[in-house]
Structures are given as structure tokens and as C-alpha cells.
Length: 178
View 1 (tube, rainbow, N blue to C red):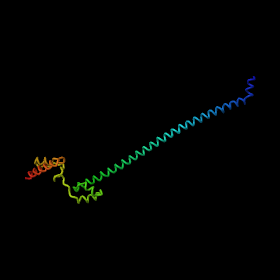
View 2: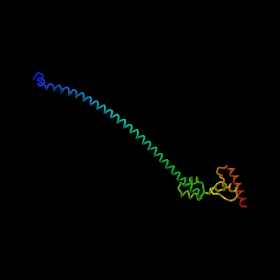
View 3: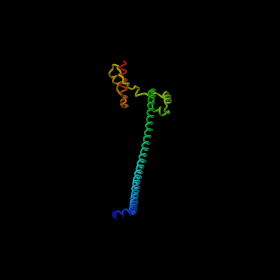
View 4: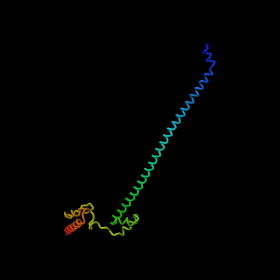
């Protein structure tokens, strides 16, 4: 055994104490760095969570606003559908009893029973100058001028043109009868 070996054998506690001091000092630095890194990560994580939460709150608000707009649109569509339904009923009753549909709406609560009761009491509405609207069927009288006059659409004519058409039609009708 040489002296160097003896020294290292005799001084193992000194080496251990130096290692402990170095290890504990290294550990303190490592711990401080690890704590700093963990706090840094926690701060980033906390910031990410806060950003995500803000984003979710914003999206929730937008969804609630969209839901409100959608509810309003649905309510409006229901109102329009109800009006259309009532108008169809009014038109059907007005056509059945040949009365003015605006009066049915104006003087009733909109129920079919009330509209029918009023329609029975209202005066009948005449279409045009006593001429019935064209049914789309051909009137084959054999008189070409009467057929042409009967099939002519008078809805787009002015008052004067309708008056003249009526006179021509009555004249052609009288000729066809005689």
C-alpha cells in the first residue's frame, strides 16, 4: 500500500463531507431552478387557462345572442304563419259568401264562426260591371265577337275601357239572342 491509498482510506469522511456540501449546494441551486421553472410553467398555464376562459365566455355570450335572435325569428315566423292562416280562412269565407274580406277582418275577432256570421249579413260584392270573372272555360256560342268579348280579361283595363267593353259585350249578347 502506498501512502496515497492510505490517505484516501483514512480520509473518506472528509470526501463525503465535501460531496455532501457540493451536493446540497447543487441541490439548492437545482431546487431553486426547478421551483422557478415550475412557477414559470404555472404562470403560463394560468395565463393559458385565463385566455381559454375568456374565449369560452365570449363564445357563450355570442351563442346566447344568436339563440335570442333565433327565438325572435321563430316568434316572427309563427306570427306570419298565423296571419297567413287567418287570411286564407278570410279569403275562403269571403269567396264563399261573395263579400269584402277586409270587412270580415275589421269587424270580427278573426274566428271562422264570427266571420261566417258577419258574411251572411254583409251585402254581396259585385265583380266588375255585373260580369262574372272568366272561369277559364270556353263559351262556345257560335258568335265569334261574343266569344272574343267574353274571354277578354278586363282586370287590367281602365274604367273607361271596361265601360266600353261592357257596352260592346251587351250589344253582342243581344245580337246572339236574337
